[in-house]
Length: 101
Image 1 (tube, rainbow, N blue to C red):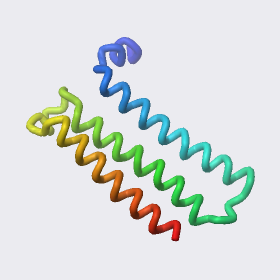
Image 2 (image 1 turned 60 degrees about the vertical axis):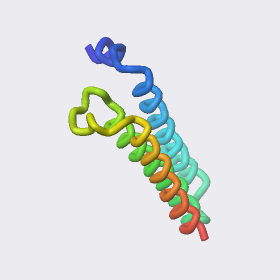
Image 3 (image 1 turned 90 degrees about the horizontal axis):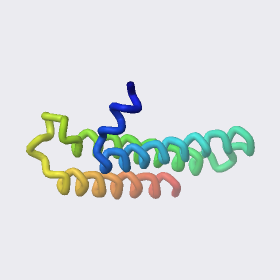
Image 4 (image 1 turned 180 degrees about the horizontal axis):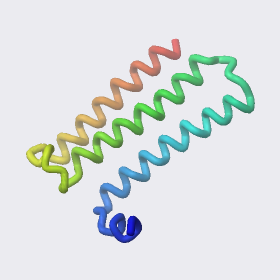
């Protein structure tokens, strides 16, 4: 079953999964909050949601690159994948801050 297969997943991939789930959950909370309260500063709402979704996408990319079962990135060391993740997050959040104004 899925639970047994996921139990064999390495811990570092489970941590990345948790990070991605948290980022998506944060985006959903922001969407629900906007639906209840309103979207007066709409660019702030968009910045928050796009930041969460962008971070989740970068987390999924990190998970793909760090996974030992993935043969496509077998020559890429995990340190390089993490450095790419950090650099891309920095660029993403600089763009988000610029969008805020």
